[in-house]
Amino acid sequence: MKKPLHRFASKIKIDEVYATIKFAVITILVLPFLPNVNYTPMNIPILSKIIEAAPFLSVEIAKQLDVFNPFKIWLMVVFISGISFIGYLLIRVVGTGKGLGLTGFLGGLVSSTAVTSSMSLESKKNSKIVYPFVFAVIIACSTMFIRVIVEILVVNSSLLRFALIPMFTMGAAGFIAALIVWKKYNKNHIKNIEFDSPFTLAPALKFALFFAFVLFIAKFGYVMFGAKGVYIAALLSGLADVDAITLSMATLALAGDLSGVVATIAIAIAAMTNTVVKAGITYMFGGNKFRKATLTIFGIVVGVGLISLIFLFI
Image 1 (cartoon, rainbow, N blue to C red):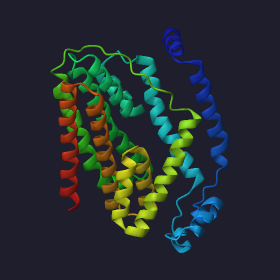
Image 2: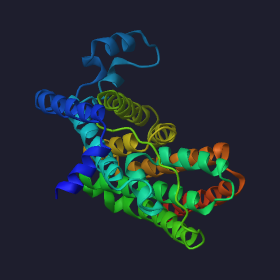
Image 3: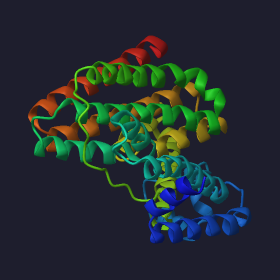
Image 4: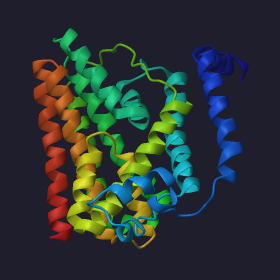
């Protein structure tokens, strides 16, 4: 028992330990005292002044945007950080050289974008090695869909009756493609992928702000433009992140502000947009053969997502 603990301790940096403790202490001390109340922009002095001066947003509309709940926003930050931290700790324990499938899966829990970027750069440096890099990227990006399903299950399980099929089919398409790729490669080991600890205060605060912003934009879009406004917000959010829009849609649907269909389509749009972004990363930074393989698979995943949405909701 002592040896595994010693190995684990040796792989954790001291600054990561301090950062994790700081985050945990702040969460324990702050979260219970945050108000569990929905505020509108008019309850926030800075925003209320901006709204009063803005010609395109009336006070009446602003009062409908009751999406700022400090307790729930920070709770979602802790939840997302927790998922990422589990993957991060497991990567620290097993290392990234213990198998590309495990590396891709755990990397997908932490940051599929980081895995995609790292593998793309490595594929350009080592142009003769293609399929190992493709395999790791596709596993990581397919894990994103599992992560989305878990987030919906925890925040608003009733939404899964709409969202499960699109998320599952896209994830399954990715994993099947990864299995085909796995049979082709020669099990080369790859260079380690570096991840930062997700339990640090600065990234957590950034996610809290981004999550609050996405909540606001999604509700604003729905109030002003109906479902189309939500879909535009989802597309823009998906360029940077899938977690924020997933949690936002699940939260708004739970509150009855959005229908399950609208929330599901928005989440799917964000997931597909984020997949296209990762395809762009592989195109910009990857080697030629790596690029062709990943773009083909990403195209299939997005195509499956579109077909599932059309089949279910149109």
